[in-house]
Length: 373
Ligand SMILES: C[S@@+](CC[C@H](N)C(=O)[O-])C[C@H]1O[C@@H](n2cnc3c(N)ncnc32)[C@H](O)[C@@H]1O
Image (cartoon, rainbow, N blue to C red; front, side, top):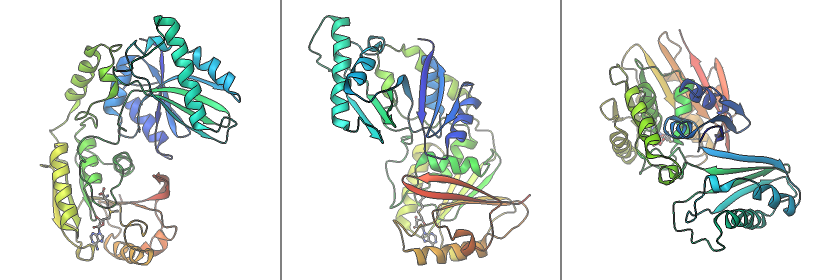
């Protein structure tokens, strides 16, 4: 099927990074919007985006966008979508969504109206009035913001941040998509030596390794669309082969992760193993107070405790101060640190060369970047 429009929702602040990544992978139409990237293509584009996107939260087919303030308008518009192109007689099609600042504010009522409209449409197409919904899931999603309705069909299933390697996590793991964005902002390259001095479950180093080795983040997981009878198996097969061919094992990338918590370190080792990058990363127990550099060229990336889920703010700021004394400006080194603390630069002791606002879930953070030549 050609000429489909797709939406890739992503964390706020990561829209540009997400669009560039899709473009880099041949999806030229990718365009950043607020909280999402829009692009067009066919089923191969859909399979590729699911497989390779490091920053998108999921890939949806964007079926329609329109204004609606009454249930009647919502019903008529949803019924006019050619659902039979995507949903078969026995497929299951649950509906979920959100509504913000809109007249149609009751999510459960919108859910019922949308379901009824889809059932009406499919009933007249297939000549049946009862749908067993025993087949593959085609999750319908809606988003209503300021009376503007977007109707989507999810193709990913579990969120794309779930790469399949992090069955285990410690107390405050960073989302894989955000860790990948930090690796991008830190300009991780295939010949880099990356250090995370408070690595927890190892997400930042694992995402850095996947990026450096050009390993598709979705290569070890499955997606809902794989079960859809509407998409030929060959499409998925070809995109997997393309992704496999891009892997670059012939590079010098290596990394080291430190933490004071033995349990976090053992989780990190097991996650790196599952991600297939354990030969590139060492995990060692060390307090940041004893941190020292191993070699001349280091890309340091760090997600220290925030004083939110771990430690209190005073304890967290003590660590920022220690980091400031250890992470000295020196040729060959760069530092990329994420924190929600507006006092970070003051406590760390230096103004960042660059800053980027990003959301870690609901928490507004900044990524502070210090680059030396
Ligand atoms: C926010 S978590 C890092 C989460 C990590 N990015 C992940 O994906 O799991 C902060 C980590 O700092 C570690 N930590 C706290 N104090 C430390 C210290 N003094 N030295 C080294 N690590 C420390 C904690 O054990 C915790 O694993």
